[in-house]
Amino acid sequence: MLNLVSFDKSDSKRLENSYNALNKKNEILIINEGIEFDTIYSQTIENIKIPNNAIFKFQNLFKLKSESGYFYIAQCLADFGYPPGTKGAQTFQRKYSYQIIGIANIKIDLGITHLRPKTKIDRLINKLLKNYIVLNEQEKFNEKYYLKSNKENEVVKFFDKVFINTIMKYDDVLLRINQKQIYISIAQEFNTNHTRIIQDILSHIKYLQDE
Image (cartoon, rainbow, N blue to C red; front, side, top):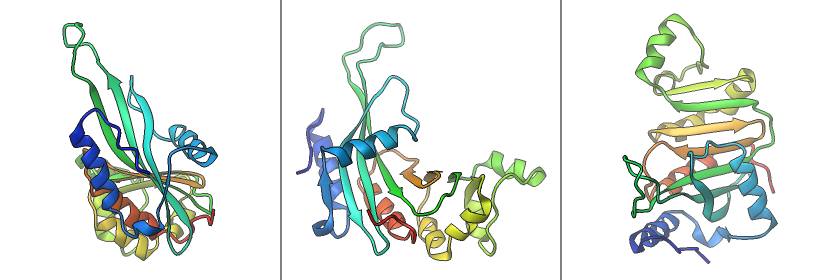
């Protein structure tokens, strides 16, 4: 059952709409407790950047299946409580934010790999110093996203045409790989369609672990 407990009724509706944006809901398993939940949560907080002074938790964890294996999508809450105001006085407005994170375990080791939108500074630096991966015959991708890894050869093989084309359908995709663990999010404020976007991207990975 979905955990829709929130600080505001509108947030409960947004969480529900976020779940409803997923495809093939009859095949989705909602996990909100147990060993599997604890394992994925612990794995995630060790590999993503947690906002300072926030209590971070999974609001809901979804387990999904694709043709190549399983992956997870988490509705996450970063709760900052009631932070002091600009003059140090206690505020009475709770500060918090939601985020969608995709999580997958893969069969091959891709080292430490990062993908993010390319900035103007990246483009200036890259004219002088090539410090990122350039994928052959993928000019639009190379222009839009910055990809870097300490296992370039393996990453080039992993980023096949289908996976690249799926990522290119969307803006502001963030991807972090730590060896055989992948984390995907969207560098935007919480939007109910982020679950569907991340589901689409992870569904096009060929090397997902079966369990």
